[in-house]
Image (tube, rainbow, N blue to C red; front, side, top):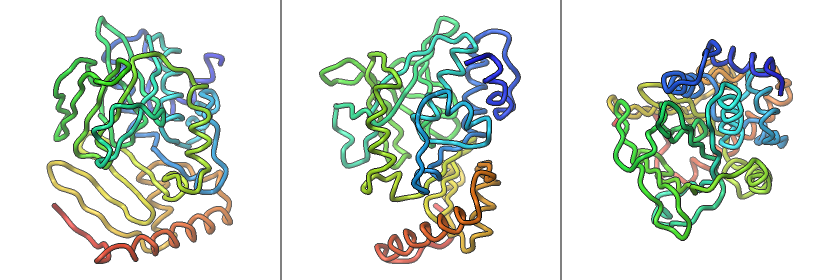
Length: 289
């Protein structure tokens, strides 16, 4: 990619080109990425999943789109390298609470480490509800605002790291130390973005992180996760309300969606919401904890 390819990406981040790679710049770039480029799967829901080639993701982000981990961390790695950072890509595996004790790595997550100013950092803009800033890549507990994260060695057959966020629906990510490439994730991306049983295909999801918490839209349920004030949630009742949240709170440009796209996606979200409600004992309302 030419240097100019990244200009739109940096404008999307609202971030001036740093004169040199520093830890301070790395931290600010990750914060901007999480605030301005959403974790989202709208195109997967519409049956036209974008590829994970980093150049494509860079151009999509510049145009106002988002993506999931292969897009988000893939493009972020390219940007960081362009700015002079030493970046390594790693294969990871996201584990739900029921599987948290597993030590294998499924390859369904792309994670990054970055070395700068004599320190190595765990960098992840692709979890949606992950750390707001890079974590020093050393074993221990790391606090950011009201959130607590843990890093420790992965006690599996291959060396690696184990990231833990007890507040997340999927609290564990196992990460291999060995370097990975974009090609290592291609087959998994096809499965995750097209298989009928994939969560990315079944459920619309948008996430956005800021200093205080996480905004989450799953189907028609909008949640705000704040470890200090508690979690609130409400149902989006109309298409107008839904698209105002997608384009406003989550800053996802909508100019690539035709009226037919919007109607089809709203119908799909409503159908999934009805199925979800049927499985709950009580309808969701506004709550706090």
